[in-house]
Length: 276
Image (cartoon, rainbow, N blue to C red; front, side, top):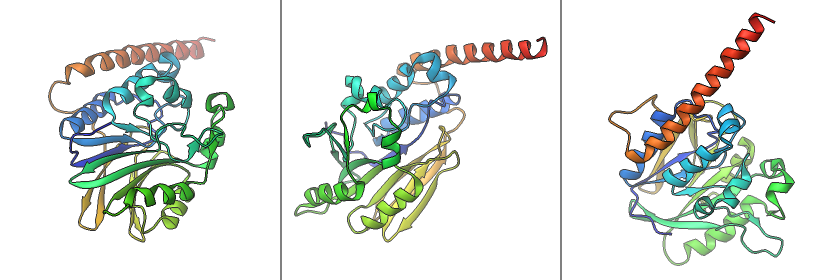
């Protein structure tokens, strides 16, 4: 897979099927693609909301397939990533293999971001892996993230300077431990928050650690700035200026239909509670 000279990285994580603010979110993702950002997701697109229940994850799969360049297959709905060819092509995960040691999905992807040779890896935490239903993860084998990051980073660096970006679907402490263990090897670590809230940015021994707002609250933007990576978090707007691209019309319509159905369900429940 090749990417057309991205100038920055736009990252999300743990959207969790929260599609209420879809107009601003989808327009922002589409605009990022048009402006040559590498659009990535650090896992957790699917979640236990009414939208996922009604649509069975179809809209979330379309969003990932149409608006993202790379995705970490992690969190609820793990089987969607492996069973949908359009998603599988975009998946990157470094620390899951088959029992024979072969790659479960592509372990890394390479792009030139703002002129810098950049390798994107993806890792899943132990607890997050154990939470995947056994029937969904099949015979996938988990490996400690820091170990595989070091191994793949050594291959990536070779004889030329290469930036290593890691997508992490891990608990907060796991993410901190990975950043500490991989200082000097990893340039930036994009974390999928494990709790609702605004995005965060920090630096740990030269490793930029950034997380976007969970539950579709926001996104992160990263770009190389000298010897480090600059990271900024933004909330998704409720909407964005201009007419949505034609390719978003079907997604907006599907979500609007589900929104109306969910509101109707709420009205029926309220009526039952009021007149038992």
